[in-house]
Length: 139
Image 1: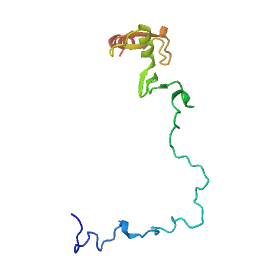
Image 2: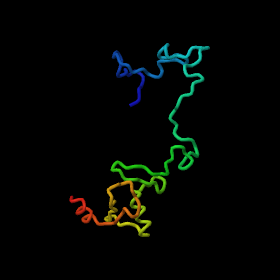
Image 3: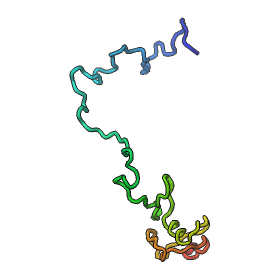
Image 4: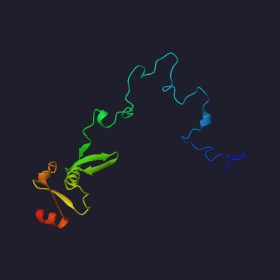
């Protein structure tokens, strides 16, 4: 409901910290301490301040100094490879799919024979079902 002539505001006589926008005229400020004085330079004049703007334009993938080939470690210890922008796949599954020249079924597991999750040589990998994998690890 709009405020009309003759109505009393809800906060009349109450001590609130709400200050209406119309309380200050142009050039007036809430605090004298935060006001810029005429002739005084600002505190950050000439200082370089990092704004956290991210990477510069064109600094992507191989051009970026932090690029590590698109390979990172997962929390379980496996190597995670970037295949497309915003797409990641486990590296041992990619290696096995290239060797078999087909996509792996979601029920097929790739087992590391020596137990080293970062050793993705084809001699160290074998494809098996979930039940076979559970028998090896006796789960």
